[in-house]
Structure formats: structure tokens, C-alpha cells
Amino acid sequence: MRMPKLFAALLTGCVLAALTPLGTAQAGTGPVINSASLTSGGKPCSATTPPVMQGFFASLLEAAGSDDTYSSSDFIYTFSIWPLADPAAARSVTAHGYSSGSMVHAQLPADVLSDGTSYAWRVQVATSNGTSPWSQVCTFAYDYTDPAMPTVSSPNYPPYGEGVAAADQFGQFTFDSGGDPDTVGFYYAWTQDLPAYACSFGGPLGQLVCPDVLAGPNIVRVTSPGGTASITLAPVSEGPQTLSVAALDAAGNRSPAVRYQTYVPGSAPLIRRPDSRPICGGTAKVVFAPNPWLTSKVSSYTYTFDTNPAVTVPAGADGTAQVSLKVNREPAPLQVTSLSTNGFQSTEAYMLLNVNPQPFVYSWVYTNYGQPVGGVGVAAWFQFSAPYTDGAPVTSFSYRFPDGPVKTVAAGDWGDTAVQWAPTRAGQQTLTVQAMRADGTPASCTASYTFTVAR
Image 1: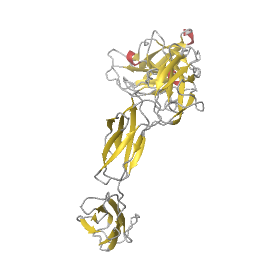
Image 2 (image 1 turned 45 degrees about the vertical axis):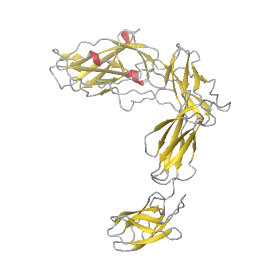
Image 3 (image 1 turned 180 degrees about the vertical axis):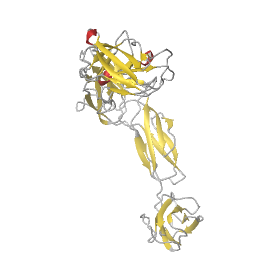
Image 4 (image 1 turned 90 degrees about the vertical axis):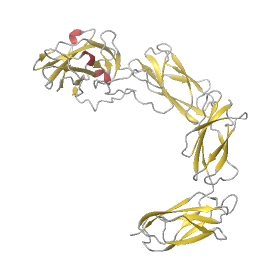
């Protein structure tokens, strides 16, 4: 799998001049090359040990020149490149800049570089004030061959169809290059497709920067070139999972990915609901219990309820934990994970905690279907019906129409009633209703009934 040509659309033709200022021009009587600006393939100039470069990025040479006499002029750069073994085969590429200190990017023609060859290059810049001396010589080795596809094995996460991993055990994986001497590391992820190796124009002078091939996340080095690497991973989900692994060489070339499929059983804790539904503003007692497939003892649980911050609670001797949750709306989401003594964090359990439901509210005139209805001064009846609640029955309703005070109306024998109201203004409006008990405490959450009054 060849590396994608991420910048092919950006660098059209042989050259592209960027007007990124260097800050201060170098002193002198004519044009000079800023030695610190010399880069090739996203890496700084190296005159001794040629860095290994891959693909499209290796064909990008960069430099910045300045002239203390002309801050704005036509700066003509000449890049000269040749195989280290054949200086007589030098090729030249010209690029243009238009201000002193601007970084210039020169794209080599496709026929300049040959796979497996080391190169040297230098650059000079000319203005109407003269021509600079040649810069120092920079070198690099060009590698456009992908390493061999690796193999993946695991002693405790068997291939899919050949067994099941333990519910709370970290996966032990070995990546094997098969003896390919070009392989220096492996890139891996719990995903079907691995993200591409990326470079960006983010250097201090506006130059291309390519990160160290082995410095990023999800990368492991081989024990020796062409050898193996072992790693311990926690699964990111449950059920059928795919671990993708690709071999890397020193240039950043990546092999085709091998996809290792395995089955990870569920590890989410159990959530035991309260015996009765709580009411709004009240508390619900919930018990967390270990997943029965776990092989290690649970030490704690971390949960989030509604919009509150995450809370961690210790597990008791039997592995369970009981928490009291204040309920302010219906339904309220609850998520929880467990942490085992071996450091394994489970997948997430999720539950919507239902409370006593809201009362039913409806009007035959002012329907809540969205379209404008009724009108200013047009009176209509609004019906309230009590929901089923645990405990004491509903005896009244607390309600408030838009722009009005909170009022109370008694519930009928069947737990329902109706009130009449006429709007005083047009537009979208909301009626709120809450079922109440005889002692004045809420028996439900507040229902919101939104309708639009016609003009």
C-alpha cells in the first residue's frame, strides 16, 4: 500500500513559493541562503548521515534566502541535486520567491529520484543585486518500497471463531515482521482502517514537517530490525473486534495492514434498579454489581448520572456498590464502568432511570402540533390527566400558563381535571403542569406543553 500523495493537489508543477517571513534578514552585501531554512522531505538538512525519506515528501526541497538591499524583489532559487555516487548527473530545478526571507518550496520532477538511491543537494539564490554562494550540501536516502506485511498472534485473544477472550483480561499480542530487515516498527489500532502517515506545513519558517516515524501513538518498535514486538492492549468495545497492524520502515513506508479479528465478551457491570420509581426531586437507590463473566475482583465503579460530573465509588467485599441518585427529570441517563483489581476497566453499562411519569396535558384547540392555532383572546379548555404513581394518589395539579402565576386545581375522582384559559399574545407559548399529592409534595416531574397561538 503506497502512501497517499497528500500534497499533490497543493504543489502543482515543479515549484510553489510560500511567503512566510523568517523574521530578520541576514546581514551582507548581497543575497544569501539561510542555512537554518534548508529542509528536504520535511526533515532538516543533514550533511553527514543521510536521513531516509519516502514517497512524495522526499521530492520536496525547501530554502529561504534574503537580501539586505532588496526587501521585495524577484528571488530566483536554483536547486541542484545529484546521486551521491554520480555527482556528474546533477539536475537543476528553479523556484521563485518574491520577498526577502520568504520560504520557497521546490517540487522535483517525477523522474529525478530513484528508489534505493542516496542524493545530495544544494541551493543558491539570485537577485538583481547578485547571486549568493551555494548553500551547504544536504543529503538524504530515497526509499519508496513498502515493508512486508506482518503477522499477528495472541495467547489469550484467539482468532475469531477459534475461541473467546477472557472478559476482563488485557490482550497479549505479538507482531512478527517475518524477518524483513526493513521493518523497524509496527503501527496498530482497534479499527478496520489505519490513518495515513501525515506531514504538514507547520515548521517555524513555514516549511514542511514530517514527524518521526516511530514517535507517534499506537506505534511499537521491533526488538531488532526484521524482528518482533509484543504489546498489551485493552479492548475498546465488546463483541467481534478487529485489530489492524502494519509494518513500518525507517522512511515511513507502511505495509498493507493485516486485520486480526477476535471476539471480546461483555464486561459491563450490572445495574439493579430501585424497587419503586422515585419522584422528581427525590432520590433513587441503585446497586452496581460485577459482570458475571469477570475473572478478577472489582475494586470500584465510576458513574455519571444525568448531566453531573463523573463519580467513583469503592466496591464492597461482595463486589457491589450502592449509590443514591437525586432525580430531577424523567428519564435520566445513567452510565457506569467497573475497575478490576488487575487494572482492567470494563465497557460501559447504560440505563435510563425512569421516575414517576409526567401528567398528560392536552387541548383540543391549542394543539401542540407546531402550526399556529386559536388566537389572542380565544378561550379554550386544557385537560390534565394524572399519571400512574407509586405511593399516595394525585389530588391536585400545580400549573402555570405563559406570563401568569402558579395556580393549583383539584383533581377529580379519576385523577383528571380541566382548566380554561385565553392567551393574551400570539406566538409560541408553554404551559407547565405538575401532579401533586395531598401533603403538597410533587407526585411527578413537570410536564411542558408547548403550542403556537395564531396572529
